[in-house]
Length: 280
Image 1 (spheres, rainbow, N blue to C red):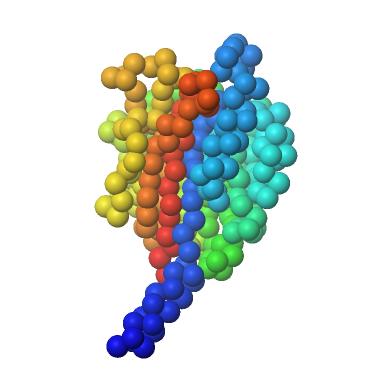
Image 2: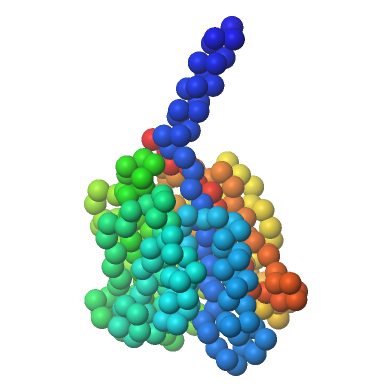
């Protein structure tokens, strides 16, 4: 009997080691604005970095990253490889989304960007958007499984309802057009809730929200935007999401309410953390 138990334990351990879980954080870090006063980036930078280090995610999906902030991320996390897309040129000029991949787990194979608009190949406003909205994507090889992973970080418009709807549909089309991809992780500040219908293009594409997975309850509040604490509780909304392909299973998901030592928030958004298990 003992021999059978040992064999079973060995089998379970082997299976787990072949497909170990990895952690993803989606985080709108808030761009560097001196007008934020006590909440300006230099006052909270170390808290953002400390939060990310403590929760040990292997993938960062970031939004509202300015070039100076990207440079600081690269210096603070030399064990990560980063890709960023600024709204002014699609690369490192202007504010935009970024992706960080832990070198210990992932090998970056390809990266690129497009704009949420009717002319996605160049910086351009889309539909009724107030701002130019780039999307950054990477294709990485998971060293643990040898399989490919498409990671996307996006930031939908804060004013244009049509732009959010069309942008979500555009992202879904982009994902469906990528061939040879095993797993998909989409992170972002979507500036809307699932109930609005504006994200139906993503939901109907087969992507799953990590909040809706039966494998694990969601830890933390039912909102992610708090405006550095200025938004009343009754008005706070869940607008930061992580979507995944169906062959990734959630182990745990949480909306993190970590605060700074002075009881201030590290950002005007709460980060979203999920731990995912690749299914063979």
